[in-house]
Length: 192
Image 1 (cartoon, rainbow, N blue to C red):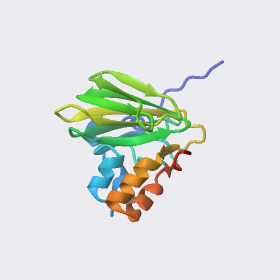
Image 2: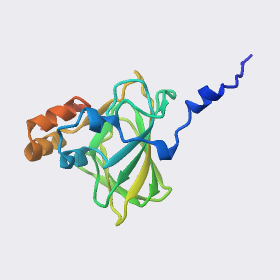
Image 3: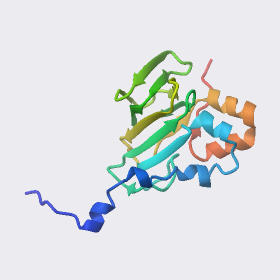
Image 4: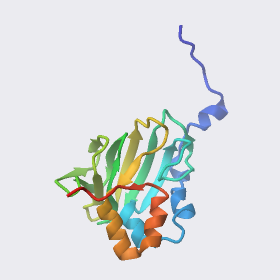
């Protein structure tokens, strides 16, 4: 027979995330201190507010109001018009997006083979091993909720195609590429 429990008030509060108290991902203030904002804007949404993080290494930092929820990651991204995240893949996890405000265009494949545009309340669940990137295609700030699920070993498995590595190297140099390489894997160039 299953036993049910009622959490203490303190245990309950440790499972609550209040939007007004969210802080930007620590990756920006700890791992990418010397990286220009323009390079960060290539890789990440302008502002990422973690809601839930697992207690493992991941590209979104180490601090969130809720730590540990069945190896799920959840965060809110805020993007000005034209800005968003580069092509990337979560190789063993699903990444599900829901547009909370605005309009966001998703690019699929490397090279990009498909695009789809989502509006407020639309959602897209991208399966593992698929390159995807997105940007705000509207005229006002876009807000997105992202949920990453299925972490087999408890670590986010993000990787970025070589095309993005070459873009960063060309625009910002090897030091910026090296800073990002501490957060995720750059995939090798595709075989020709």
